[in-house]
Image 1 (cartoon, helix red, strand yellow):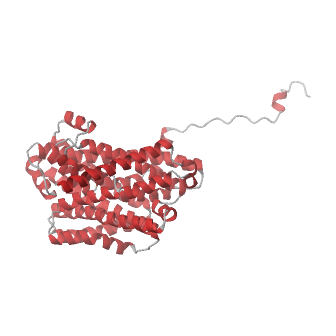
Image 2 (cartoon, helix red, strand yellow; image 1 turned 135 degrees about the vertical axis):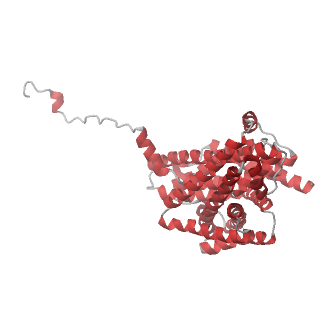
Image 3 (spheres, helix red, strand yellow; image 1 turned 90 degrees about the vertical axis):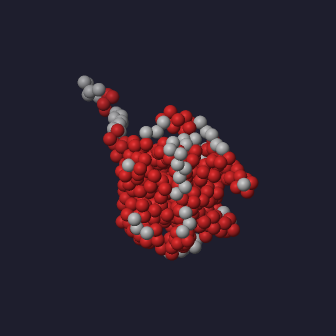
Length: 426
């Protein structure tokens, strides 16, 4: 050994690699790549059905049903998180899993329920956009309906240029809805103490059950539970557990941001209706009445903002409903109906009711109640599939998650049972 040479330096020793810490800019950039699917899904939570139930709830029952919006939003976050986890863990959407896991009779039943839910969904969304064109531009309802069909098809057609394009268009429409309603809150000057109290403290009367269930049906939507598991697949890069877990963490942030924006918009609808209509003793039974009443009470800017929000909501949610239909219909029984034919089938009931002159507000509320009854047919399969380790692998549900899911289903079924009882009793 040569003198003066440190023997430690002569050994083949691996030197430690310094850890490179991610900056907040790096984390924000990583998150921005995953933002999008939950924003598409959140459109279903601020669709025209929400306008109908929230306006009716606020104008008839003041702020007392705000807690329904809060709890519905918490359930929505839970269910959309499960749906996203299924798509990320398996690379397959919920409807396709149902086709593989359940028997053909069960899948035919689920397909029928889904078709009815799709009709109710599209009815609400289509009517909302139709009313938006009518209120803003004075276009007759039937002509507005045909215009809505054309614009909806155009938005869905943008999928050909990639999901990101549709996400950007829908995010812009969500921004329009949000800005419109927060403009109205500025003019409405609500009683904020009552708003906070009724958001946190539940209260329900026999008269408000129908609207409460409608609010639940309008907020937690069965078709987007199926859709979310499909949308996340475009960001899924590999069958790698570490990569999938990171994807899931970032998608949860996407869900929390998007769903809470939807919560704020829904709460704003109830708050404005309570502050303007209930306070002035004006229970609102039609969307046109809501639009017309806003002008003398809060000014033309407010009524214009309402019409713009309704139009943006109807167009964006119609497009999302069409996207959801495409992923649902094929999965259960492998029946490949051309998308345009499927959209025409689902829009026929809405066009027929418009032609018959039925009150659109009544159609909107009843469509949301139908969706509330359809919810278990989406939630139960989601829970049964995500609890199976042979399907989910390491991302299988924990026991507490399964119990929360059972609680959510039980609550929805109980509310629906109370609604049926009160309906037949009266």
